[in-house]
Length: 222
Image (cartoon, rainbow, N blue to C red):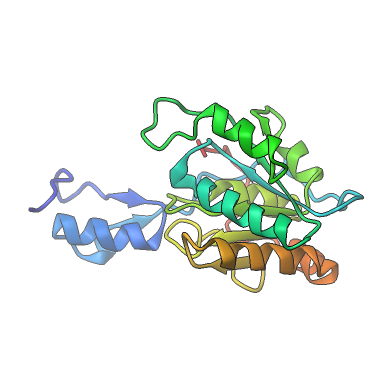
C-alpha cells in the first residue's frame, strides 16, 4: 500500500538516509524528492569541549529510559564489564517514560543500580554537565531519527559507542568520532566500551574530532 504524503509540490523531510529511502519507497516517489534534514542542531554555546574528569572511565547514556533505546542490552553489557573486571562505569541519565510501550520500569532501573552493574541518576536539566563528568557517550538504540545525544557529546569532546543502525550511524563516524557496533549485541557493546575505556589516547583523539553534523541550534527530544 502506498503512503500519501500530500501533493507532489510538498517535499517530505527526514533525519537520516535510511528513512529517506523508506519514505521514497512507501510514497512511490523518487529518492531525490525526499530531503534529509541533518538534525536540528547543537547549541555550541552550551555544549563546549572540556578536559576529561579524573577517576575511572564513565560511559553515559542520556535519554528516556526505554527498551527501544537499547537499555536492556546496555545493562547486559554492563554485567559483562563488571564480571570481567573492567573499571568502566555505565551511567544512565534520564527519566522513565511510563506512557511508552517499551518503558523500563523504575523498579528495574533501581535494581540495576543496586546490583552494582550501572548507575541510574534520573533526569537532569544540565546535559552538558553530564558530558563534563563522563569519558564516553553510549547510544545502543534499536533505531533513531538522529542520535542527538551523541552529537551533543561530540561537541563536548566526547567519543561515542553506538549501534550501527539508522539514526545512529549518521551521528557517529566509525573509527573517527567513535565506534559503531551491531545492534542488540551486548558482547560487542561491552568490548567497544572496554576498548575505549582502556585506551585514553585513542579516546581523547576521537573526542577532539567533532562530528560534522554539530551546528548551532536547538535540540530535540531524545
